[in-house]
Image (cartoon, rainbow, N blue to C red):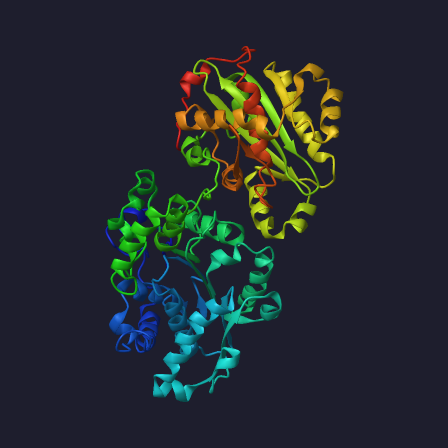
Length: 560
C-alpha cells in the first residue's frame, strides 16, 4: 500500500480552503465505522445540543477518518501512529479531542486498555473532560456502556474494563502507563517546561507494545517564541509536510499562514483570518475576530502579536514588550542567509571588531563579531554564546530554550569551567591570524580570565580594550538601532539573538538610554550586550585591514 503524508502544495490548499490531508483513508471501512460513532456523539454545549455529524465541518471528519482509517484490522496495526494538529484558538480542539478519544474507547477491543488525554493544567484538562462527561450523559447507550467518575476525570468501559483518563500533567501521573491512545492538548505549554520531554516519553511509551496505538499532539501557537518539545515537534511536522523528511507514520495538519503571506503582511488583514480558522463562522465568531483585530492594534504591537499568535497561529519570532529596545522592531527584517558563521565575515569583510560580555556561572558568555563588508561598507554581525550546564539548573524555566539554541549550533554547553574562555580566545585568534582584527571590546568589570587568555594567545594588548557600560553605552545602542532601521546592519537570523533582543528592556537616563541585565530581569541578554560592545568599536570607523571583492558574485539577500 502506497501513501504519503507529505503535502507540498499545502499553501495553495489552505488558501483555497481545501483539505490538508493528502490521501484518502487507508482502510475506508474502518474510517466509516469510526465516523458513524463519532458523528453520533452529542455536542451538549452547542445551541440545540446537535450531533457531531450535524455540526462539525468537513476538515474535522477528514481528520477523524485519517486517524481511524489508518488501522489495519487484519494485522491489528495502525499504519499512521502520530498526528499533529496545529490550529487557532476556539476551533473546537478540546471537543474534537473528547470525540476522538470516546470513539476510540467504543471501538477498542483490548481488555483493560488505557487511553489518556494529557493536559498541562487542570483547567485545560477540564476543557476535554467536561465534553466527554456530557457526551456520555446525553446518550442512553453510552450511559449504559460507560461509568463516569467526575472526581477522577475517569471513564471506564463496563465490558472491556478499558479506561479513558483525563489528567493534568506531572511525571508521577503518567509514569508506568501502557496507553493505547494518547491525546496531548496544548503542546505549546509543555514546551516551556524543563521536564516535559521526559514526561511525554513516559506517557507515550506504552505504544511500544500497542501496535494499534496512536499519539495526537494538538496545540495552538505559543504566546512566546516556540521552545522545547513544542518547537521540536513543530519543526519536524513542517519538514514532513514539506516532503523534506519521509515519515509515512506521521501526519501533520498545520493551519498556519504560508510564508509569502507573512512576508507580505497579509496575516495582518482580518479578511484572511479564515486561513488558520477552519471553524470561522461556527465555533469561531467572526465579529469577535474583527473586534479583536481592531482592539489589539489599538493596544500596540505587543498586544497585536499576542492576538495573532493565539487566534491566527502566527509564530512569534521575537517578543516585543512595551519597554522594549527600539532596535528589536527592525531585527527580524535584517536577517540574511549569510552571517551564519564567523568564516562568512572573514570572507566578506575588510575589518572586524569583536565584543564580549557575560561569563558568570549564572550567565551566558556572549561573543559578537561585527565586520565592515568590503565595498558596501555595510556591517555584518555574527554571534555565539556559551553556558555551563549549571545555568540549566539555575534557570529551569529557560532550560528548554537553551537546549534548543545548543541544537541549533548557536550556543555551546561546556563541560568544564574554562572551556568557554578557550573557545572565545580561539575565535578571536582566528580573526587576528586572518589580519582582520581591529579590536576586542570587553566590559571593564568583566572576568579577568578572558583578558589574560587573550594576551596569552599573543593578541596584542593594545587590541584588547574596555568598553564603558551603563549610560555611556547609549551611543552604541542607538547606533545599532539606526543601522538596523537603515538596513545597514545585517545578521544571520539566529533564534538565540531574536530571543535576546526581545528580552532587552530600556530605561531612559537623562539624554541617554540604558539597557542592563537588572532591567531585563532573569532573561538573558549577554550576546546582545556583546553586540553593543562590538558596535561601539566598529562605529569608530577603523581602517581597512584586508578583504576581498568577491562578494559581488554572491550578494546578500536580506529577509531570507
